[in-house]
Length: 169
Image (tube, rainbow, N blue to C red; front, side):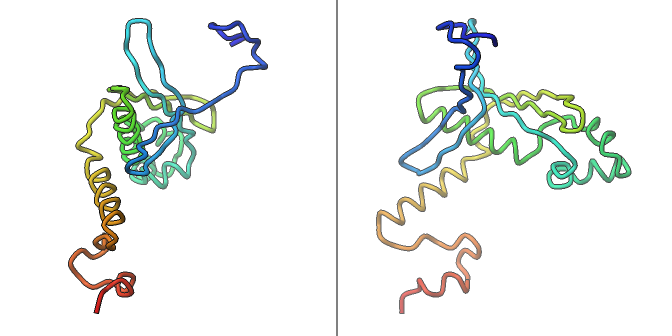
């Protein structure tokens, strides 16, 4: 924008600032790229992701394989956000709820580094996808408050070299 629509500050005074979300009790925090509040009352978070060959190799290798290694063809076959991004977005939506902002949607904007083409995906809130993360965070906080080591998450109920120093004799 050339100026702020609210205070008329010139463009060179505008500062990009991410939206901070936090649950102090669970010691979980995050930052998203935007929070849109429409005049009709709809609200949504925005998360912008730059996509390159490494992104597809890491998050969707099957797209590269199905496109016979053709990155642009693989980009054309991206039809939904990657699973890791969906989980990140669900974390952000839950943090917003816990902060008293009941936002139900996050929009992912995928921008292709090669040519700046983009794709937009809207994802609805689904707490069940991240409930285990918040439950586990609560169990760690409870363990810390009780002064006991939390259960091992690598080998629950078993033996773990990393946990051995915390075992009581």
